[in-house]
Length: 639
Image 1 (cartoon, one colour):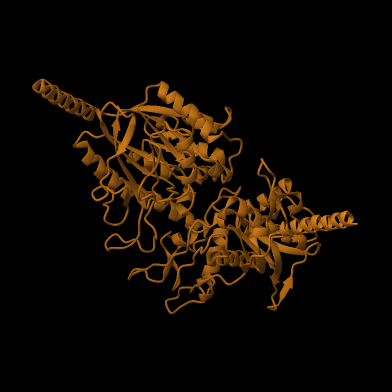
Image 2 (cartoon, rainbow, N blue to C red; image 1 turned 135 degrees about the vertical axis):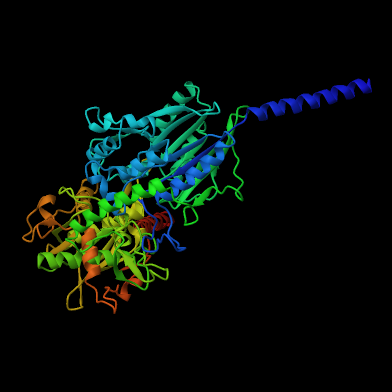
């Protein structure tokens, strides 16, 4: 009996081992390579440090991405392991290369991605920087809708009208792809709520709820027999986590929008979340195994051998074909920049100034050195062109895309290139078809300026750092805790106080300060960019007590298009104002303008303080009233 029991035990173990081996044999390996927020960075940055022959800290560039992808694909092919290459969106917008999509026939980013072999990319908010009409043309120039067979456009919750050219480009809700090893992968892509709120010019395009759209896509992909489900999101890590919790059938989320380098994946339930930072600084690598028994993926990376993020530094060999194509686009861009700067700049890599320090963004939702530099440049340029005093210049943190970084190498130390300068503020375009938001000039009453300052504190507190405004020409003292009195129960709607700014003063030409008064109708001259000026009056629709009206110097209301600033017959762009201001500084012995030392740190233009919340006073008054009533009642009972 004991022998029989022993034999049965051995047989059970053998069966278990055989079954385990069978399951293991069914597991299918595959790799996801991914990037996000490429933002038109065709070349490594800082551009001033990039050098083909010497070791340097410049990172990124499509040629290096192509080189790394080729190496990994070749290595995986030896083991018969399929590779997917995906982008989490925002392929457009930022540096000077991001201007080329304005030229008909040019779609450099997407054309390069097709050559490299991206399987799909999702639509991000910066794809709409030039509006849906330009985006439709850009996609058409890149070969869509036919090009979807090579590189699919994902827009599960992006809905252009049926009669709009964008609807003809083959934007996919979702699709399935059978890999070489037989694994069936279902792929869809979302733009998240925060990204939707930051879409500059969506035009008639609508965006549906991301989670409801994901639920529908996942149900369809499961019905189509997908083994693995991948969501390629332009949403940010926070929303990716929420999606993973709400739709647990998603196996992998390839993220974007928050520019987060995830050196280790995040797991929510069985969902694996990855993101590769920004600007092609990294190539994300996620090695996976699909377990059909458990119906989930397992991460197979050995971080010692295969890190989740591979830095795109000089150790990565460039793909020669992609490098040649990038050089072709650079030549086109150089010619256009020379035209836009009236011959001042002949190459995007041209050295234009010297600086002993970087001009940085500093803390979030606070005054910054780069905010001071950019607004000072705007104020100076507008005064030079208009021939009259500008009291205040305004720029938003969301439009400031990077620090201004001088070189750090032997051949570049302390030098600034044109490319690295305009990278900080090169977004947008004008109706002249040229890159960059045009500057605008208008007048506001002192009271309206106070309201605009309140808007900055309110919106940045509610919606984040992108809405925080930087200023030249004034000083303010504010308490961000006073911006909202309370939130309406259940709906959560905030009730603004209009009392977050405790004081605001103008910097006068004589060096004295002038208090900006509440209720005053005195006019002040303001310059900003076209996008911000168009946004400010809209605040009054939602919060009437913070409404402002754009006016001429006589106080008459004006249309936004009538406020555009022109220089030599052309729209003056913010990036041009920054360039001209930089070129105006005193020169060193090499003949290069030198960035003044005052821009090394913030200057104290905006001081933060913390006072008692405004709700304390009515609450205290209420308590006092209750106490008084109680005392009166007690006295009456005591009689």
